[in-house]
Length: 94
Image (cartoon, rainbow, N blue to C red; front, top):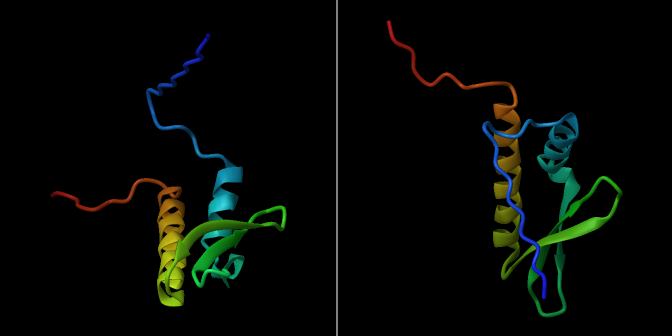
């Protein structure tokens, strides 16, 4: 039996492409998200991908927790977009 094993290393962080930035912009827009109720009573969060297909992400017990999960995802991708503008200065010295 043969196993294939692969690793990758970087000397610096991988470069962010324009495609990745547009994907993050898409995911940081709430209109590209929805909540559906499943037959078992749970609520499933889904996002609309760039090919116009709905992709399931998480399942929650309440609609409030499902919306909170979406809001958390939007916040996550919004923060990623902010850092594409360059380093954020948090303190300067005189």
